[in-house]
Length: 290
Image (tube, rainbow, N blue to C red; front, side, top):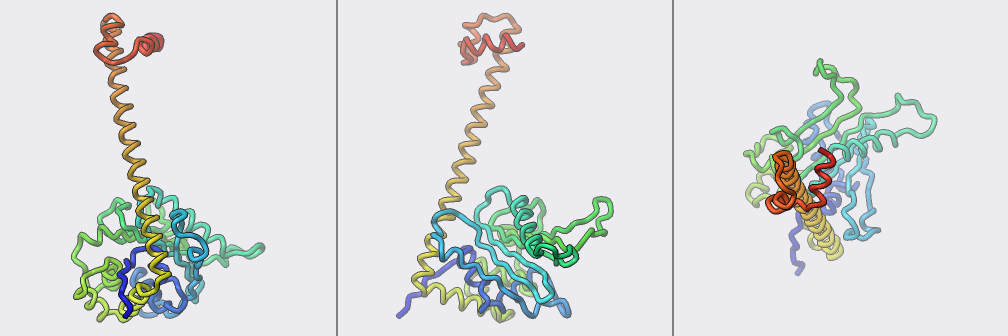
């Protein structure tokens, strides 16, 4: 009997195994149509998945690297999807950097710029980052004073923030809401409703369950979870350390300001040192700079 090992679809390694494999492209197509809100003649019917097997070749616990999904539609549109659990406070610059790489790598030497195709970057975040209420944000190149004028359609950057999604009542009529319920490890009865409305979600669930039966997959999953946990701990520790340093610097500045006032009032250095904690040498330096 094979025991089912419950994996989280939000784990970037598992996410890539579900959505980033050519044999699962029907799952990715459904997911992209939901994110891009494509319908009728604009719907994606086929796609080429550029598989990334880098993690299997490297140790996933070495560092928290990038596990993204890259695909190309039959019309040439480049699409990159990345799921981020850890807020490294650089997603705006990071996403522009990787968008630009994906965009420029389309051309070989000597090819004309007109051959550059639309490039879409999709960031799925398990933290809040964009300062708007809606959980799904879309960015283009628009003119400042004429918001309806788009310079070009080649740039499209999307952010999906899961904590904001968790605050709302999901709408089962919306394909993206159904897919996010899958990513959020929803209760069975909710997931059953989503799978009934979208067969590709049922396929994704079966892939997820299969991955949980694979011992090697579970090992990579656990290593990746540890790497994510370690990165969260590192960033949290660094921010707390920075906060404490800022508090200490602020208190020191307050002591210096108090010492300056006492110097102006003509108090003796010994009294200033006693009541502010500022050393005699620091008091002397303050006097020189006043």
